[in-house]
Length: 429
Image 1 (cartoon, rainbow, N blue to C red):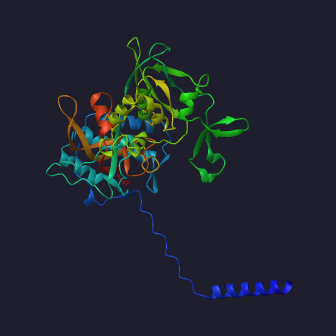
Image 2 (cartoon, rainbow, N blue to C red):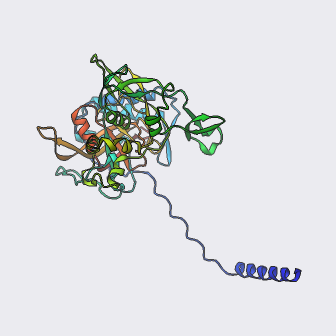
Image 3 (cartoon, helix red, strand yellow):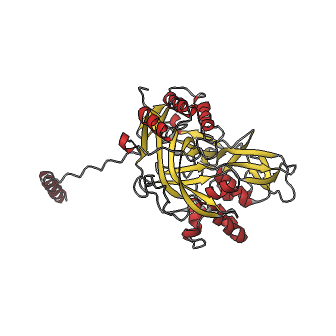
């Protein structure tokens, strides 16, 4: 028996030496990942123009400065693979205000930016095919004769929109007001994983304590069907429509008109930590709504026309949002009031928050009945003042349109490609 073992061992050694003696073809080096942002050469700067004639821009800049004045000047923000300090973002905004005060001509503005600012552009891949609430048939823009073409393939950014809805509600339950707008539950906990290891820096998990274990927090279906938040979370108001409440959670903030005509502002306070799943994609995959007609308004239509299926569809998204009541609003991730048409939601892991941006994409033009007549190209300065669960990567951005009919139409149908640039002051200026 021992001789057979030695013989087998000898064969194994021979094979190993044979393998070691054979030259091995080296593995090809991995392709380097493209950076999310790249600094543009002067000749690649876009032509800067503002379709709102700078209206509301100074107000939006002031909101960013309000945030920057609240945080340490040495705090850093992501700038692709680099970082930039809060102090530098602040100087950039203040220097840009100098030229706004002079009400510059387009030529003066472009000369000023070229002489004083670095411009960064996204190197993100082209967006994925339309999905979910953000979906809408893509169309090529009609450009101004002297405007450079929008990027439509590589480097294209997918723009979507959000708005501030108005709901009908009451501070007490009764009559049609049966659907609670919950505040943050008492039994929810947020764990900062960086306290356990440096490799988890910036990562958090949300859950609850169950016995001696920490488990994920309840998902939407449990909250809606089992009443697990009763006596665990404050109710900010009661509203009359569960579909309105669902879309309030998607938008993240809104207004509720009470029975005495008082209006309260409700703002995103937190969420249950469950991943966001878009019900628009579910409806497309199931053949309930075609990709070509997908929009927020079309999703709402399906839910209203199919009440027996509405709960199942909405509960497909396990994410659930909790609200606080604010004196004004809506407020974004920086806890400053958003400015319609000027506030932009981005991925804060890539873009510096509160910073100045320039976008070129499309907006809808409405007919006299309030329906979309056509889409037209526009360009505008905006501020990075918000984030979003679906806004991940350098190829995504979400425009805050405000409130009212136009805002709802624009937010519900915008899913167009365009360009997103970041402006930062030259360090020596």
